[in-house]
Figure 1 (cartoon, rainbow, N blue to C red):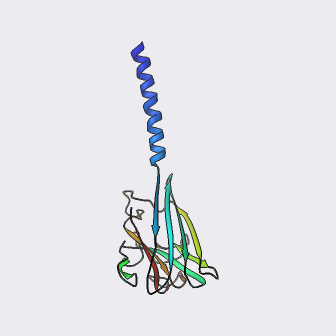
Figure 2: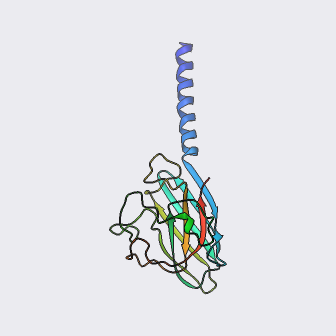
Figure 3: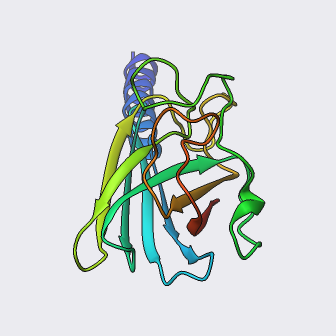
Length: 175
């Protein structure tokens, strides 16, 4: 009888322990810093937080010209070139046309536009289940990609880039 009770206690403790471990390991976070590109003075930070199958992205930028700017995830985590073009094109693992996030066809990297205020500061936030941090699904995994802020807004039409202008800031999406 003592063995059965002990076995039940051990089993319950194991289940509770596994649940606690899976809950705490279910949240991942990446904090990134942007490098200025194309002779700009743009700086900023970004974070990706994955929790319960949802990724929340927040970017905070400074040094932009006031107005609307595009931000995209690009194919490579290579920010080595002065113009940021070493990141390649937009990340498009599902081979869709460029467009506006959530409307018709769009690349998984087509985050969208955000506005910089009169002081050149801007913030953008997006939450999605279409990304993951380091999962086994290549159509969702953002690790190893690049994050680019553009000088101009995305027109959501021009293929394959949205005609967003120069790449003024870059960050590698790596752990």
